[in-house]
Image (cartoon, rainbow, N blue to C red; front, side, top):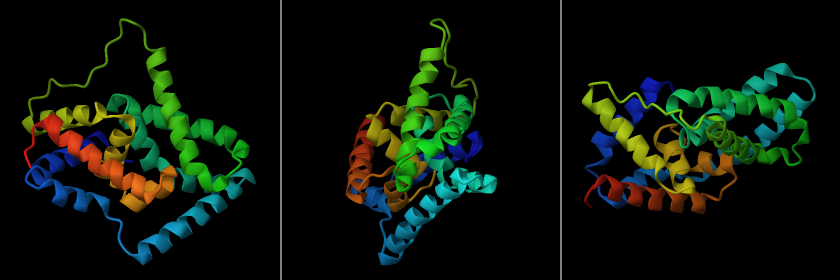
Length: 212
């Protein structure tokens, strides 16, 4: 799971590398839906995650660590799309704690990714419900480093996008997941992920004033 520094570096890389690309070049680089080998790997991942869930439910403590490692980027990305980054890690832990307690209620064990994503979204909503009305959210914008300030602005711009777009962009740009991984872990179709990336990137470019 990326640290704050890695998150900021990833967004900063986006600023300097992707700003100069045309829209078609950018989206082509983002998709990374590659060849049949990648598809075969994805199919194996689905079977593997179901087996891991079965092991957890049977009392295998180590298996839950494997599940965490497999889905932590997904959960972190979804949470980061919604809450201040300084709060994201604690919420990720809440998500996996809730999952551990309720994993035996999951009917379709191949859908554990979509299930975790739902818990993550719900926990993000609960985070704002728990806030006191006068409590302010700080993004630590007092730092003087220009690139980090720009990176935070980019992250805010991504968060301002519609839910499906901001989630997919953060999973791809910050968490480093490929298009096929996003599809498999969230339960979306590859085409849906492709559309979300394309439309989300187009909207983000408009928000940032990046010309074609």
